[in-house]
Length: 184
Image 1: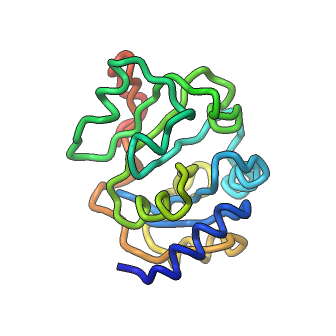
Image 2: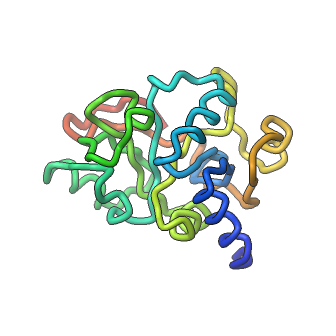
């Protein structure tokens, strides 16, 4: 595993409003603390992505999402279920989910990550993280740290590591209907 100093630095960068990149289950992600609207806007500018699209929150466990989600019992069972592949669930948003995360919707997309680096970053930040693939809109996402550094040299920190075995970004499903919104 990576040295504790790296995760301490990453946590400090996140808390200070920085934007970082890190490996996830299938691609490199770009993220920040969800309460830092300036950092979220910076991510959207880098990716050429509209704020109205909304963003995903990842967390090391469901408890990190307290206040960001307000799931009904059926939605909560999906968040707590073990899955073979990473699945992002769209659930009712809680009062801590700002519009720049939800895209102005009453729902929020969240994933409990089991990727060791991504989960360790959430723990180091003591917070869920914005997580969006490291790519410009319409382009394939990065799967290696070197790609991220080339494409986004203005990031505050790129955390090294291997992406997981998923073939690409996570599948997104609506927890109320079970409908797949984006195939994984």
